[in-house]
Image (cartoon, rainbow, N blue to C red; front, side, top):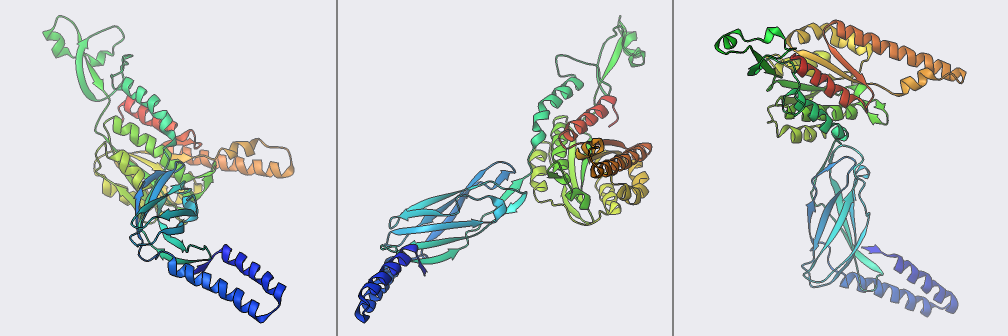
Length: 430
């Protein structure tokens, strides 16, 4: 049972009447009328327990977009339902409106649409539906709560999608499919054609030339059907916020662009998320399914406030791939973590696979390093320069071990990583 604001107004009005008469009969009559109205409302209100509730609507929403979940209320009773409905979700779901007013005739149904604008990735579920069924006088209501199961998965945003047409254009040129044909390096034989001035003499096919009247050269195309393993470091450094976003989210955006580009290039893409434990693994998806499988797996990955275990990370990669492939490790260029964790295990990984380390740089470091306005700013500038120097030292150390390093601010990292991938394809190093 629940009393409404109208019951409070009736009680205040009754108190004024009692004060005006100042008699016991007035008190009994006023309280009796209010009590009778409350009892009548409770008796005549539609039963909440008999209502049948079902859901429909979106089950996947990209972070930054909006979705809708529809709650259908069926009233099988013989009384009309006048109710206030509260469909409760966790605050990060951004559910609106918080309450809805419905009227459902006997045997009819009503729909309550809840708009969701999630603020974080992952699975979000409703807490429950509370329905307050009002009586005809509006003084009191029957109240009940039901759980109506539903789940909405909030996927990571693919903000770098805007770079995809440009990168695909470069890929078409590289693969010889664009009209502006270029001669890119590669290791897979494509066709024979006549020699023209400027061709590499090492590409001359002497046997074919002997059978023809012209000199023939072999043309090559970039490798296809290569394997790429995207490794997300989900340790404590991934939780740091850069440019308003966690490093992990910026890494996911870059990984999605690379995955989309590699899938179009005909390469296989797998995903591994690891810190001390393997948090997610996507292996063996087809080229079409990988673009749907990666965001779905990434949605549930959260940064863990623990130090990552580089040994576990390397073991997981080596266990996934026995043949040589491209491994892209998304991690921070933290001097202590790289020097103590990754470096002792780097020779084994680099000897079996080609390795790229992609790191999210903080754009504030450049701003802090240039500031000289106060004593505090000078100290901040010194700290920023020290941080930049450490990152440069770590990058140089990795490069000396044959590792390619892509270190860029969040907005530039996806494009820079895609360019590094295309450069490897061009050079035939995959």
